[in-house]
Length: 187
Image (cartoon, rainbow, N blue to C red; front, side, top):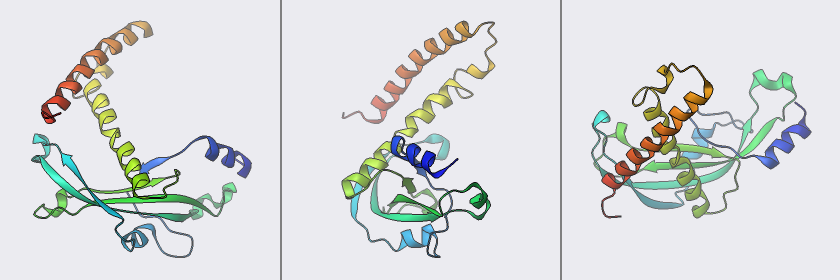
């Protein structure tokens, strides 16, 4: 893939991912070390729903938000593909600062995106967009092994499977709506 093609992809598409591991930065440091040095740009609150499976009780979480721009260095194993030496991404760090919460239960998201972030509202928008993935995960969880078991369906035609999925999605959406209404009774 040549650099022109990468540029065309970058102009048409954006990424928003959660970072699970630190990355080497252009200039010698690593992403998580530099993120820890960022000043807190703002604080906001979110409602964390209860989850019996994880023994988590409903609470209001106080979140500190930091953001910045980073140049992630090209990994050594990819140098043979003629990629650029680094890519520039925006990073958002949302970390819970709620007192009296066990450290293992604290929310800690490090997000990377190709979207521009110029202020706290832009960083909050990325957090909100990423948070929407929870609903997508719930849909697939309920559609698959912890719900309707669509992967075990043994139908003869693709059309039959399509109809089954559409019927299940209709029911699934009602389940999710009831779940949201149950967890947010004042709205």
